[in-house]
Length: 252
Image 1: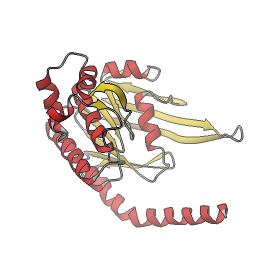
Image 2: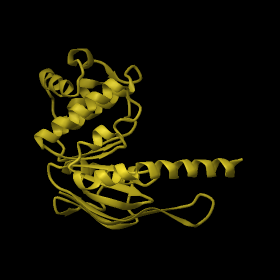
Image 3: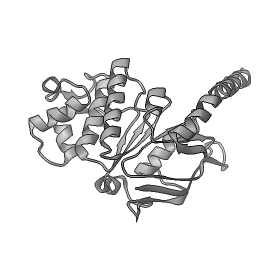
């Protein structure tokens, strides 16, 4: 189980010593085998929260517990060894590293070709075609993203964090991602945290959280929160349009 208690994150403004609050007193838990989808307006602090869970950023205050252990001060490597996995919005590319080698590194063992093929098949890639290819610019964004998800599966993480997995990929790849998450939900093999605006991904949630302005606006089961989200969509879009118009007037 993952538990966050009173997490806050502040940064100093570039042009002054003023502190800007990105996250403000965030507390929640993710139970074993559950899918939590985090959504909300852009700039609300969602991606920062994902990075804090993984240890890419350190909270200004608060505590993070994983399986009852305080991991607040642990490094990314230490958290990964405990079973926490992370998928970036834009996955890194590794020239000179084959897909097969990446999967073996993720698993921490010399996976057989058959085992590597099995992981790639789960994300809808033709295994034999991809195994010997480098994880470089020759692969599309959707291909790299699906390979990254396959590598997380090879790690057998206890909890995996996906930061906007739909970003920058084609419709076919997105459909395969949804199928992958659907299978994870059916098997309940691991806990999953997904940051997303996509309705098909939100619909997979066991629990749903809305973050706005660095605070948890609402959190509960999908059945409890989804009607609130759907009802507030029009207001949210209107507010975003007003902000955009205000910024445009200010910049001009």
